[in-house]
Amino acid sequence: MEKTGYIEIRIKGLKGNLELSPDNYDIREVIGILEQAENLLFPGEKKERPIISYKQEPGSVRHLLQTGMQAIIGFTAILGQVSASQNIDFLELNTAKAIESFQDTAVKKDYIITLKTSLQESSELRIDKTTRYYRTSNVWADAEFYFYGKITNAGGKEKVNIHLMTDDLGIIRIDTPQETLEHLEENILYKSYGIRALGKQNTESGEIDKGSLRFVEMIDYSPRYDNDYLQKLRNKASTWLNAINPDEWLRDIRGGYNV
Image 1 (tube, rainbow, N blue to C red):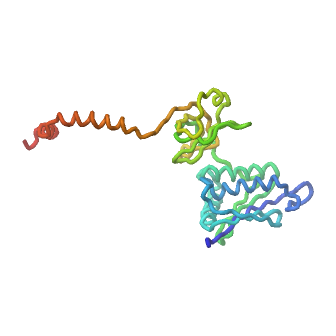
Image 2: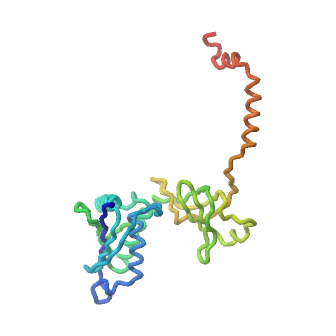
Image 3: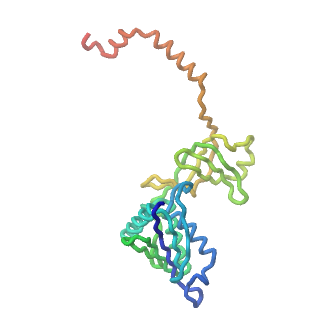
């Protein structure tokens, strides 16, 4: 059985005149913590991630999230680097956004939020209204992208988008005007297309902010194997090659050297 460890997210503060505790900590706040905790531990593709179990304990409010030791070791290193540098620009996007979310909560509600892991050497990252754990805005620039893949979903009641399954980035969601989908003449689901989109890209790491992508244009893209076309190319090439005298071609390549 895989060894496990845990991360602890401890929240201190007041609810009115009462000290924060599990009894007066709202379920919406719990949900927010759980969503961000998953991004802390597994900022990338989450399909194959190990199980994350959860329990809440007193001590103001202590959120304990248990998962595989490899993830805990990695997050321990992240905590140490963030604590030492007081900077989150180097983090993967979802991890940085999770810490920014904690920073926003600390400022708005005057909470003290501390993060640490079960490892003895774990640093403790303290976030409160005086800290500034935000990404540097000039690290992210507007960029244009071309994505290719299979469309797995399109539409939405409030936030309309296209889900595109790509080979290198997994499924990406691209915000799309509703009228664009309304005017499509054919069903695009489970077909391969290219999509031109605008969004944000990290100028240092090249990482794409997947949450910023906006639709610009659909590109018809059919990456299929066409045997007839390839055979025509082979026949055309073989005719050209048969007309070449190998000895003359070799002399031309040598340029008269050693003739």
